[in-house]
Length: 380
Image (cartoon, rainbow, N blue to C red; front, top):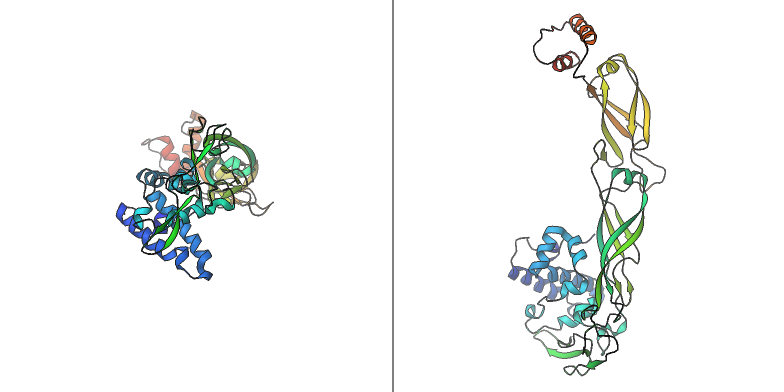
């Protein structure tokens, strides 16, 4: 699961824009791939990608508001990786850019440049972005497991322009700013690096006529029906990975990560793989004992109730809890707490017999209060 963006930058949730920029600049200088030793480059690159994504979201008021309200799922369902960085002001963080956009295009592609023109992305087309999605299940569904079709919104490469953004049948012109190279050289107080061309954004070419289907962005927002097999025993902390069902990029699809939420049940309360419930028992059955029918998620079972069972007594029914998602054939237990079911109304004969029982038990039935309260007092 992704780390919190605020935690990544080491700032508080009420930090202003200046504090976000300052925190990112300090971390970016520390983990810049060109400022660490060779043996540290791999870990530095991973950290650099992480802090840059956090900055891309938290530096944008709209994206930040979405993240504050919905977390990572809100970002993943509303923005592509291109969208996260589009509009982010990386150049002001380092004055004249410091080669930041070129480095970010190498890591993320998309908003920092396209393929071709000699840019770093020429090594291969970008794979589609992984996406996250929350799925709600009932307790019964989590108990049995099942196949379910879910609707997932995602961005897919435009079928008309194949992701180029150009209208079908039209040619793209060479970028005059970079002469088709996709990069321009910049001087920085810290580095001298090739930076993604600001005119063509690294593509080396300029679109003459935009694709009417995707309006030049190269992708369309689609909602897909995806069939998923959910195993039995999933809980609120469960995650699932569905390979190849993320966003579709020119380099292939990403993956879909499902986060499971199990709805609260009207009768059962789940505690890990165990279930708890209140079992209503008549005061006669609790007093005299006998067999009672206990509902479970797999049907009713019969349980022997000892004579003189008190209200609040807990009974354990082995193997009638939730299945263990990590161990096939293993189940938790069901714990049934006895609750005395006191009748609100009795006929004259039932009332007479109970009043006699109350007197024999040393209880005074004086007519004050409801009959239900009197019976509760007798069987307390």
